[in-house]
Image (cartoon, helix red, strand yellow):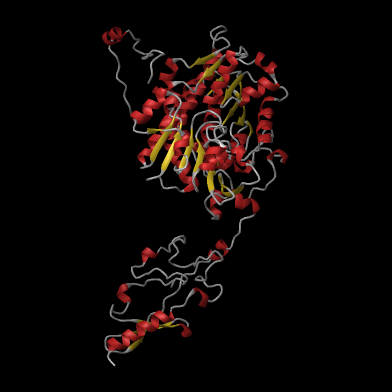
Length: 600
């Protein structure tokens, strides 16, 4: 029989003798795990085991174990024409048929042994761990707290922070957070944020000697993130005392709250608060013996509402309110119209630097981030309806259009509607497209935009989320009925299942998507935070009578100052007007350069 015939027969034997997962010995690194996954060199999740490192590696057949062999140096291997024969009964002994027909023993090849792989993949998260782990099951993930996945590590117990007695390293316990031990991780997050917040750092450096907020007692209710921490520490450096609660039950970064508490700030917030916890934290900020606020920094109006409802006498000593959200500003205008606004208020939301940068550019980036992190959705070709075409809606639509999505817009304002049409979006009523769209995004600042009728008509697998400040835009309460089943998929992602099996994907239970499920660009938040700081300084230091009990916009000069503080980051150089040009335009050479009615 010729060598070629023998070789062909041996090749058949080799294919039959390849061991399957069932034939492998228990404890072998090639043994399939309980998750039906075979561990070996072709597992792309194992360090250094990528199949791409071996040019001869072939993918295993379905249901078979990987061969798990290292590719040795080709120079030391027999010629390519030599064929391998494997005898599983001889402990993997191998032989090669050479060109002259003789049989030679092949060099022995060792299987990769992963010392920790069985232990790693046999770990089972605890009850709390299954709920709190966001993306990685690696133990190393507990050493690095992502600012987005601040559901913290699985080591946290289920004890409510309200039931814990915690103190920082200085013995101070005037705070209520998840875990003070996370302070070091939070400090690293804050240090990273400082690099992208040049204006606040410049303001801190320029005004630190003057202490323009000396004597100010600021009570705040905003998102507690690394960026907010930079703002709080800046206010402290300028002389203010601060007490803080969260304006959103899901957006708090626990490690950042820990870092602030360790730094001496009275912080009352943790991720995943209940509604009762939310109001309890606000009350703890306000109702404290021997300390009464004289300035309010609010995001959404909840803090202002609580003081007005529970402690109205406090307004006698409060000098002003700074509000940064559409919802909160709307509440302030309602109070002003009814004659119930007791102090001057600064509308930061409608300042140019907040509206044009935070609302537009921030949402343009963070909408994709939030959707990707929670659903891993492919945007190309998806049909998306965006409810509202204000600055937030414009940012969302631009991002989705750039990714290849088919975008529809709903709008009540004919001017915004015309802008949407001119930007290439089809203007529709929600009931016209609700059956066909893949993603529904609300960003109107209104209530009951997506009601149960629309939720019932959505297609199977439709993703529903909110980019507005409040959780009132999606009628989530109507989904909490006995006939519907809620199924937690992962952190901030729920399946709501109808009796016929249809399900929708609800993100963050209808709360703000980007700050609940991902992060927002730090640089943009630097613009907003600097605007807030300047508004506080202006109201606190304004002579009596400058501001009455009404709602005001930030002076144009301050808007321009905030913008100018950020230009050096881009190595940008402003052109200066000549005296003749300034006279021709009727402007001061140093600004302001636009009238208050100008639309940027």
